[in-house]
Length: 369
Image 1: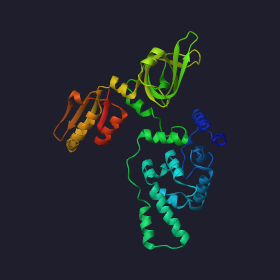
Image 2 (image 1 turned 90 degrees about the horizontal axis):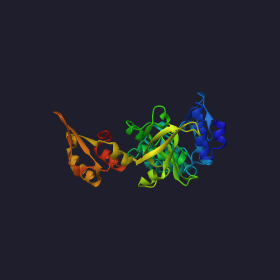
Image 3 (image 1 turned 180 degrees about the vertical axis):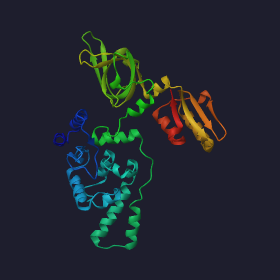
Image 4 (image 1 turned 90 degrees about the vertical axis):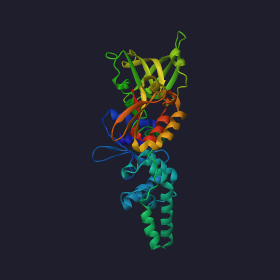
């Protein structure tokens, strides 16, 4: 399988299909690794396939040869600064570094990908200075000490969201490596959404599923009826959902590949494929599903956060909508739940919830269903 993937590594779609096939064969494909991966897909002593660097978009063969030569000569790369200082930066440029970071090839250093991207310019600057010193043969003791101190000094910044990390993987690998965009929504809507892999006409006559749109096809039947087939993927499995024109037309927005949807429908056996089919009765985007099914957005507060009240109030007003907001306030003596004035109801989009979590804290903002 490693040889098969290496033979078609320039064709991302084929590589993705081969990785799916590996999963079906119970073969493990480990993520790209700057200290283990070669140009092609290889196999280690544990019979695990190691992802080939040549299958990462934006990383050319010359750059990979430069990386493997430096690794063979000087051992494993310790961090981003060590990596840049040991390589020919004409071959391994900023574009290559960004692609390697997004692919997860540097994850073994246990540094956030966002921090690595933010530190590229600094690492390149330190490396260029080091290269100049080596070519001129002149070394300044204080400069060396200063550069060594800088070598561990990454630029601090916020971690990428799960969605940002996954989109970076899809951009350079052609698929999601460390998760799936639907994962966080399947967790959020787990009380009423069923994983696609668990759909069973014997136990579910009706069901709701949450997933990412993989394709939209419009069909006219022999009788002249309009149908839309929506491909949906939730990481557990994929399904083609039949949507009749009246249901499709009732959905206000255009549906595009990559969108995340919650679809309610009737479950039945598919006589054609022998599997399961779902006929849609209702379609929701994420914000609409929250409005439909959520009791409220719960914001947890404590004494130390009183200074944030004015900013919180402005943020709620800026995202006005129909979803109720409840405050769970506690101090050392007691705690209380407060249903706040309807004028502060919000439209619970991802952007709105992200802003609230950045202000109050990741665990302080919860959707209650």
